[in-house]
Length: 412
Image 1: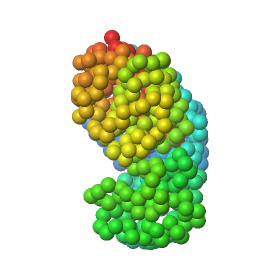
Image 2: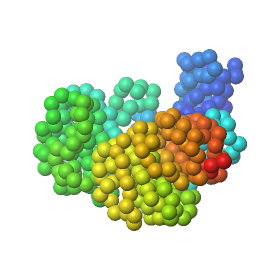
Image 3: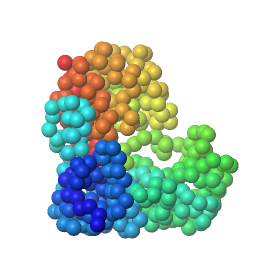
């Protein structure tokens, strides 16, 4: 008979964690803290840990709830990891994930951080990326991957964490898949801040020739912009207005919570009149605009040329210098800063950025991160010349194991 284990916590990535009889930690998807579960036969044993599948709940934990999305249960969708937990339990799990990373990887003596709960727990995503399997048109399967079969795709009916307007677009688009590029590899739907809906089709081979036909066939197609992203080139508009928000630029998928986190981060810097502020990995300039509003002379850097081009057209209280380039490549050309805000990708800070911040410390650094592990690694490197004065987590991604963290550092 398969082993019964007690789940004690939620790990980074969202799996429940328990202990096998031999002492190894075992990671089990869809398990909840406080419950006793029987593992399915075929536990994958590794040297120091194991991975298992839930076969039976022997004793239900207090945090388990019924998941509302049919895909989460029947298709074991990999898009969400925590729908089976109450929202309070999700928040507690994310606090513990951040705190554990900061202590274990960052070697910081800090408690689990306060977490700001989401404005919306459902229908918050302003962007959804869909995988594609199969041939042309309606023979394709477009949707998400099951967590236990990452090479397979199940057909999406509805994503409960995605904005209604994007799901309405998806329902309109599904009967017309034959109008998408022949060798489609990924389909992204995105809502911009002006209410326009964007279809971004990634493909190899010939250009997307039916984009205008698709747009004309869609209800309210005048609010839709079609982009074609060739495998070996840059994305471009092929139907609809060619001006406006760049659909390929990075922006938080939970816009309201992104604003909450950004405001708190900038508030920690206080009055910036006369100060030079770096906004590294600045994207479309949201943080730069807020820094300028506090009186700073802002230099914002991002590698995405389309994002920077759009940011340059934004209104701000003071002129902002936007630079298209990789942060690590342009540091030597920037004026010496008084404060620095960084919001790097999941990989964390480039080593050259870390070296610049440690070799020439500044008064205050705001580090915003979507990955607790790389955040903790970078904080461990920065602690040579900085001390952590505040940490706060923000739930930008309800029902998933992802969490946003903002850390305030002061030069030692």
